[in-house]
Length: 292
Image (cartoon, rainbow, N blue to C red; front, side):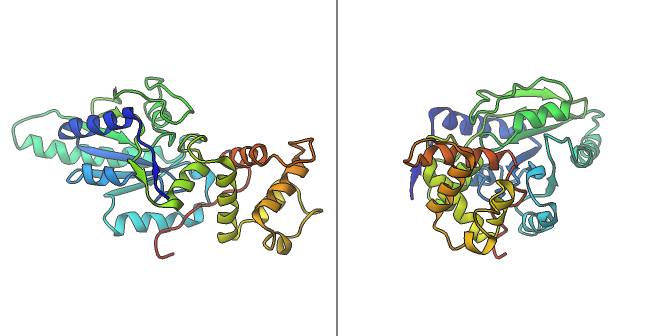
């Protein structure tokens, strides 16, 4: 699979990132906790080479926190990031941990400028991430004021915004940016399943079927039985033997999303993906670190 997905504004965003990196101290990359690898833009690591990096896994309210340690080890031990913070913008958790890190970086920078005879400084952090990962909401929560515009549609933030947190820290918000092509089918579908790319990029039915496949791989299909009270229709053992389309048909009938005799896979696919994105089908990672 080779999906071209690179609107003009994303090319401009990449240029904006390159242009501003020279005045940046830290690059804070926000990832979707459900898909830490698939939501990490490979271009960011190349562009931010030489800068201190903080990886933030957002939306931890949608995953199993018991698996988080694996991801922390993965990012730090492989030197992908200098720091790792897992938080939930929606719940407002772990922001204090992030502030401890930025304060530490500020104190290190202050010591350096003091040797040059200066007494004041500030840390400038660039916020980057793919569309719809929660960058603007993250800033709103961090600054505790509505200085960053917020939208729930991928690609909402259109231009850069500087937000002053206090005398120690300034944040540069950038629009969500994807890389030019999805050459990895798994990455493309992970982004589609979580809503990181618009629903018209890939056929919804295909995305829903891939999601069901992923549930099988992760041994999470029983989540559907529990979430949609299917116990009278199918057992845990039986559901793993069913074809993916048959599972969609069971859900379609259970939810009564269509009244005609013919199946409307698009409608049930849209409902299934919407429920997953809202956390109604359980909390789990869609992928695990390489080698797990």
